[in-house]
Length: 398
Image 1 (cartoon, rainbow, N blue to C red):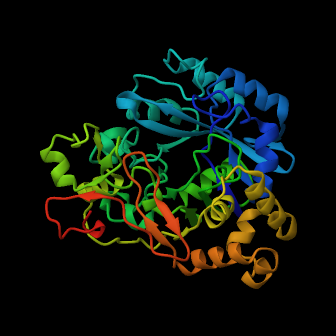
Image 2 (image 1 turned 135 degrees about the horizontal axis):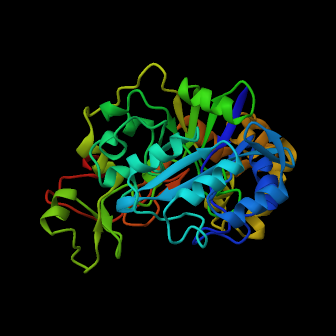
């Protein structure tokens, strides 16, 4: 069976996360999105584990169910050097035991616990309990593994189970790094709210025997991810090297010469694109035989918001989103499979935008410095200001 899975979200107990990130809200929104399997997030937090037990039915083999939405236990841990690690766990009992073992001062107050343990130590600890582990959003500049290490093995000492690409990288970028050829790539939302433009904004299609922890583990081990779905990576807010204050895109060579200080006085943050270039083995991606397609898409509410120039959480946008879901079923089905001629009967402009995504004809200005990129479906966009050593440089040179 093919399963749509978003395996990295957060609960209401994580910092900067919506108070509505509760099972009773996540489950129905995930169903409307078209997700079959969702990671709980924050599985080392005792309060969240209590809510999971109270709000779900345990179906066995690591699966907790609510309103036809299945959950497996997951958590993100911030380790040494502020590197984030994503962990999948078999049961609540194991989650509680590992939480007790984790040396962390904030594990009872924050859903994402911090520890001084390094990646190798965390891997060894969780592997004793049949858990899976890999770097979360591995390439992002603040908390990604590759911000501190040139090799994944320098962080973990041995091979972890997977690598999570994060919102600023896709398969084409990651497959320029030779050491990742044998890894399974996961694309997850890292959602901090249950809005439909957050949950499942990136997800995986996985071939599984059934929905269970052991089946998920088997599928990851045997590289049975059949598709990765996610945003255009250049929409990511740290995709390009840019100033975190004025958001001007800056040639990385110039940024280094200026000691990562912008002329406006702000701090320059190295972009994911340039960081991957530093550690890459090839200029063009070398996709191994097991690597599935990476399909670029955008949450339907954000498509509607962009087209009509209305806030994504406004009644106008949410009303149009709900009308389409009521007519055709889950959002993922609409974005990928529903015939364009059927969508245009409900919303002509949205149908054109969805068709542009399917055809790969959207226009994008890259993000950077903490500012998301911009997208247009029917017009050329004015590029962001760029500072470079050679005025002949274009964004393609970064």
